Image 1 (tube, helix red, strand yellow):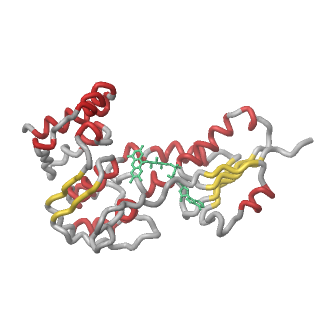
Image 2 (cartoon, helix red, strand yellow; image 1 turned 60 degrees about the horizontal axis):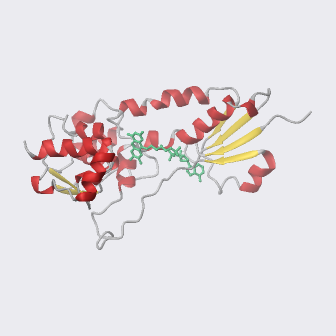
Image 3 (tube, protein in one colour; image 1 turned 120 degrees about the horizontal axis):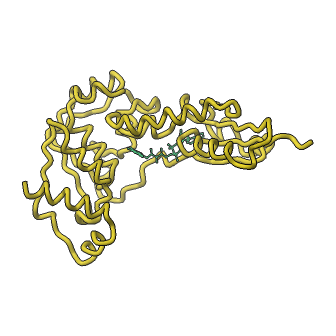
Length: 258
Ligand SMILES: Cc1cc2nc3c(=O)[nH]c(=O)nc-3n(C[C@H](O)[C@H](O)[C@H](O)COP(=O)(O)OP(=O)(O)OC[C@H]3O[C@@H](n4cnc5c(N)ncnc54)[C@H](O)[C@@H]3O)c2cc1C
């Protein structure tokens, strides 16, 4: 009788855990004895849900509950503190498993090729986010000494960073921020956070809901310069064909005229 299927998954973020779940629900895994082993570099699973998603987004962090349920399945084992390929090689995995899935995510920032990016006071979002989410690989303290901060990029991570910088530490206290982050945010000197995009409102990659959330804090005044509300033909086309882009542009317009 052939031996039951064994699968290794490298990386226990949502992709790896959902892959395990999908596999167990598939036809190939109906035989008894099927096993799936997840190998995770960090001591704990859940990847960027734990160490990327902003602390004031409990609904998204709540995905962890569903991921836990998958990890509770008896066919799945999780091995933490195992870094590929330092602790386990592809040859090891090939020797013991029938298939290997890599779901290691995208942990580092993309290089930003602009002059001065290497100067003091310039940071990639991944580092700052890792700090406020208590990632064990980053220092416990963060120098929040600037009164004016520039955030480059107009996606949801830019919104997370801007929001965390602009909110008060006490607003974030009910979230799961660690005590060192609360102390760091209490000392935050930022008074103005400027968000820069290289193109216009129609090209911003914000999700409409996350953008509107910026205006929900009583301690944040969102200001949009009316001069930045400018559309060329391509932008008008984008708004026509993309409901999300249109909603984002409308929100920005409303903020520009108030
Ligand atoms: C700042 C930020 C905020 C976000 N906010 C939201 C949000 O509000 N809502 C939303 O839906 N999505 C959000 N996302 C996106 C979401 O977090 C990602 O889409 C999702 O986590 C990707 O899942 P993944 O499993 O592919 O990768 P990851 O979550 O990165 O998981 C990869 C896992 O692989 C492990 N790993 C990496 N290399 C190795 C190795 N060599 N050996 C062993 N293990 C390894 C990592 O430690 C990690 O646990 C955010 C992302 C970021 C960066």
